[in-house]
Image 1 (cartoon, rainbow over the protein chains, first blue to last red):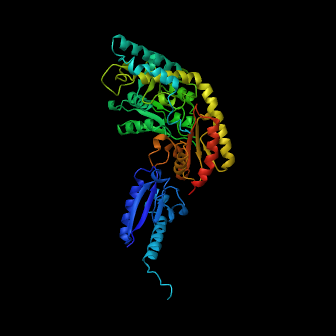
Image 2: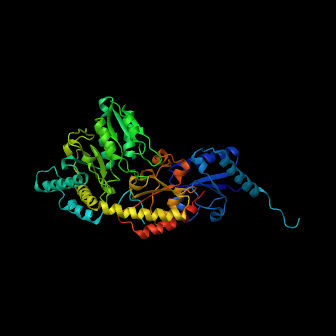
Image 3: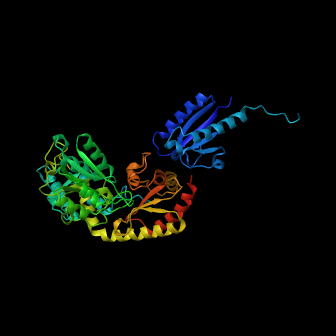
Length: 110
Length: 377
């Protein structure tokens, strides 16, 4: 089964991106999502964008077309790590993308 | 291209040349009585005189330290002496460098009373607030000359006068100002002053505390009789020689340096205001700002991402103060000035120096609007 990769992208924010990544891992587990969450600093990867199924950005480093996956601005987490609107946006993408991946392919000549 | 001269400056060739003999040839300990030691001692005396000359002080009033942070600590702790359990009061401001603020907070934990004066939207204290804050326990006022994040020049002469009228000592962190603004401690009524070599094209790891004759500062270190026993420890002779030479050059080049950066500041701001209509220049203007500090808010953009994109182009700028660059918290200076968190997160600091050229400023002014636009949320 596909393991949905969520990447948290941060900057010079110390441990914040790791805290957010850990927190999201817990939330995803509680919701039963089959996700893995990683964190990376944009200082490490600016020249080579990270590959993921969903990129959560604490800094506006990339647009969707730069990384070929959805990107979500998660700067509201800097004030509230449980910001409802941001969490809902993340859940929506995961549910949409993992639901699509789980559906069986429809044969061409049915 | 380097636009972070508030963080540090390159050691000038002249300073480097002056320091060179004191690593291997003239390496003596100034406390030694033999010729090698006395040769080093003589170099210290010369450096002391050079630093004193920059400040309008006497040579014997200069105490060498490891930098301005130590000088700030020595001034505050050494005057207020929290270990004596006496009721003492310090007045400082909300926009001081952390070397003063964190020392003030430590003093509070040790039982000292501290008043943090607020500032207005340009970063300026209100002298009426200062007068109202003074009480019978007030022993020390500590206000910086030039703010390192926005360039605000505090009314030092007026503060000195108020301190004198109320028989309170006045400490001034002059780290950012000495390279560009005249500082005559006698005329300004300053009894203690901190400065740092690496902000005036000298080496890192060395600074000085001016202590007016007659003012007693208690030592924080023990273990020798160097620096009038106020700051014992074998002196960093090469560094101090470098500081002395840098101080001499700062005094000689001060007017020219100020005119140079003032012209570059005008060039930069004029260009950006035309290409970034909603640009905000933080801090005061005219004579109330030291021209080498340019604090710019690009509404809607994320300054940290701008810094990264500029770094990819080989351009070094700062977010607020260098000391804040590893922390997620926005600048305490900007917040004290009334900028909201979003505005503070959209603010970069550009600081100009003697080596900065007009071509570099033009290149920066061309890149900044593009990068700010690319870094909008």
